[in-house]
Image 1 (tube, rainbow, N blue to C red):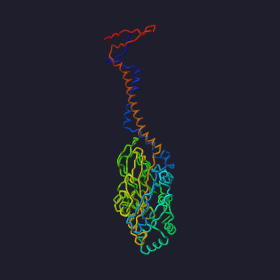
Image 2: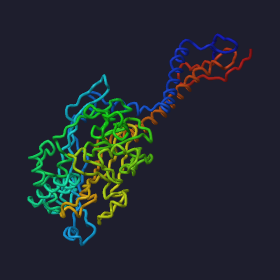
Image 3: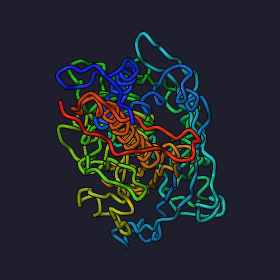
Image 4: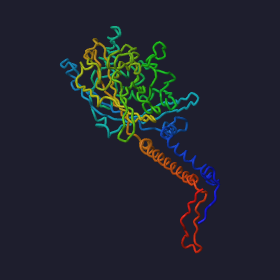
Amino acid sequence: MEYSKTKRKDGVRIPTKHVKRKLMTFLPLSAVCVAVAILLIYVDAIQIIANYRTHLTYGSEIHELLSLEAHGIHVSAYLFNVTNGDAFLSGEDDKMKVEEIGPFTYKELRSNLDIEFDEEARVVRYSPLAKPVFMPDESIAHPRDVVVTMPNIAMLAMSSMTSKEPYFTQLAFKLLLNHLKTKSLVNQTAEEFLWGYDEPLIKLGNTILPGWISFEKLGLMDRLYDTKTEYRLEVAMDQFEKFHILKMNGVQGLKVWDFEDPTKRSKCNSFADAYEGIMYPNEMKPGTSLKIFRNVLCRFLPLDYQGKLTLETGVDALQYKVSKTTYDINNETECLCGRGMCISGVSDLSPCYYSLPLALSNAHFLYGDSKLFERVEGLSPNEEQHGSNFLIEPRIGIALKSEFSVQVNVVVNKVDFNKEVERFSEFVVPICYFKMVQPELLEANKYNLNLMYVIGPAIVLSLQIFLVLLGLLILAYCVYLLLPHFVRSSGQGIIFQTSKDNKSPATKLPLLGSR
């Protein structure tokens, strides 16, 4: 055996240039692998990718979705059928008895017209349009096949309005009602109540006062989906304000509730924290203030934060519910009392519906004042059935679940000039309620959520483990390269020789020399 001669410095071998080159390559690579693995702990790569994919700008994925006709919420109508009409009108029964008939369910086909991106102002403008389509599978029957007895909305509403007029006006209206033989309770099909029936009072109003009443038939859903009433929304584009409503028809609040009067502006009539409920901002914080706006409601529905949930699928959700004080009289709702109707438990709709004394409330007067139940029998408010529930995925603002109910009522003032209407005096008359339910998420949305909460984290964790192991492996290789150069010896290394016939190595015990 022969010994190799190497240069020495303080007894330590100096690495060759080849080894140095390897060390200069692999040591930084090892550090980078470990550093990236550590960085992935503190930097949410999934959120960064999600923010990029869900940004709202011209040509983005969300822009394409906004441009398409989408399957919107399901609206289920429940009518309050009067079961003791004759006994109530005659005075035999003190209370009007009702039974709930429904659901008659429609799905909204939602489209957004004239989408405009204003990159300079960082806003998007569009005009929402919803078309209802009947869903027989989610209904008790077709509404044309169901006959109900319900209060005559036009007669009660107009009589209530006339009650504040001078005597001779009341007398003239009474004579008109007698001439038209108008009844306070009418039998019609559910379809006629929902989509319009021939009411002489409405036709007369449309003929004589076309500027006041612009329709010939009165239907509950027909008014909700009035395509003649156009409005244009302006919403924010930025990730952390995405879809926040900034203006409607160029105004930052509700004109019908006097927002344009600077002395009357408040949270009650401004678009602060307002959303349509379709999408929400990215990276929402728990407890973020929210309120829902739909133009047909003629007001905002403030939401109360309930807490953070983790669903069975592993998806996080922020839970909200419509505030129990939504229809109370308080500082948050003071702007809604500006037209003279201020009743605890209901909200004035008259500014949005031709000044007719209509009112909005929770279904079955849920959380309402006990006075609302004094004249009616058959209502059974139940929070589980008539309440609300909103689940919002906080990372990209997807609406996972949206469910709430609203009820339409006629508020009748004291009417003493007509016996046909007198039995309804000073009575908030329940007409029907609508339950709004978001349909099941699209498969594409489910897949994206699965990527974010299941597949994505698994990939990131696997990548972290791989990078750490790779970094340690490279580091171990570097140590292997350096280790022989730190072994103190006489400067002689062992040379293994093979025999000339290459059959077996001619090895001998190494001679361990000393300096």
